[in-house]
Every structure is written in structure tokens, then in C-alpha cells.
Image 1: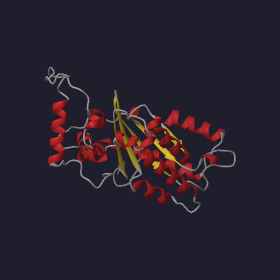
Image 2 (image 1 turned 45 degrees about the vertical axis):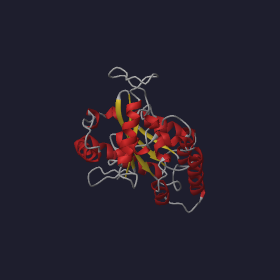
Image 3 (image 1 turned 135 degrees about the vertical axis):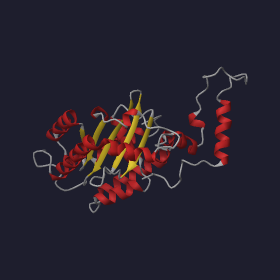
Image 4 (image 1 turned 60 degrees about the vertical axis):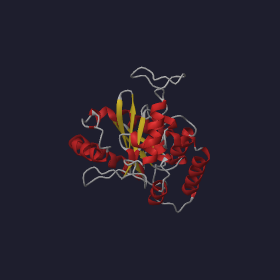
Length: 269
């Protein structure tokens, strides 16, 4: 379930010492005097990477915004993904395998289409909804109003994505049925999701209320299917309506590429 080999719940003595040093420096003014209680300088970006993860609610699923500065690495990640999509033999499983090799930026950038995630963001692979459902990804992002969730389903990049007139084809309809099933499950079993998240969080922290209590306004769904050339004006009209009425956003894989490119070098998702 965690994204990284390293367990960020545990810090080395060196990382804790550096954290303590930076924490002390954040409390000093320009003259080296300790500032009044509650006043401190912001130094989050200067913290060691492991500490940034450790401070998060879900340390092993934290999306480190400092990684957005790795311009060349992210550009290569996106270019290789585009080559993969352009290969006619690429399957849905091949796409998932590529992303799960650590190329998480491609999914994390979906947050760019929403107004949350700029305070804190987390990503989970194959998040279980009971024993019957397993979304490919769950994104959890925070804004000033608290946390919201995006459940993501990746479908095929080819096949009957749309019909000749632009109506949704079998590939998109399959994804929509999938997320509709998730939505039904969540309404009846949200406490089970909360229990699972509770096991993944940092031991010293508590889950916020919005991750304990079902609130449909905080839950969103994304289905990714096909390529840009599969969609026309009617497809986009159907997509807008579905997002407005059901909070299901249908994207094509070129949307993922566009979003991933737009996030490079930014200060947050």
C-alpha cells in the first residue's frame, strides 16, 4: 500500500538531529534571539525529505511537493509514458506497471484539476474498498476546508473508447459502472474506509473528522480512458454533464500528460 521502499514512520538519529536543529533556527529572529511563543519562521522546504514525509498524516503515501522541482526527471518520466501510450501493444496492465514503478507524478497531477491538495496530498495504490472493490488509486488532498478524496480508475487507452458519433463506448462505460459501484459501497461502508486509513496514518496523529464521516461533497471519481483523438464535441459534452451530475470526471490519457506537464516546477499540485 505504501508508495516507497523506505518506511517514513521511522527517522534516523541524523534526520532527527537535523530536524531539531532546523526547528530551533526557525524560532530565532534576525538577531539570534528566541521569538515569542507561537511565532516562528517557515522552513518546511529546508527539512530533510524524510522529515517532510514523517510530518504528514500518512508518511508513506505523502506526495512531496519538492519533487516538482526535479524538472528533467519529470520530463523524462512523461516522455517515456507518452512513448508507451503510442505503442499499439501497450495494455492497461502495462500502463499501471509503469506508473507503479515510481512514476506517481502522472496520477498525482490529477489534483491540478481540483481546488484541494495544495496544503497536503497523499496517494494510495490499489486501495481496497472491502473485499469486492479495489480502485487503482486513491488521492487525498487538503485545502482550507479540509480533506477531499479522488478515486481513480484506469481503463484501456484503446478499443471501443467512444462510438462513431462520440457517445461513450464500452471502455468508458465500463469505467463509469465501476466507479458507480464504488460510490454505492462508500455510502454504506464509509466507516470501513476510515478504519483502513486509521491503520495507515502516523501513530501519533488522529484522523480528521472528514475522513471519519461520509460526506458526498468531499468525494470525487476519475475514469481515464482512450486518447485525445477518441473524443469529440459530443464526448466532451457528455463528460461535462457527468462531472456536474455524478462527480465522475472522464479523462483521456493525453489529459494526464497535460496535467503532469503543467505541474512541473510549480510550488504545489
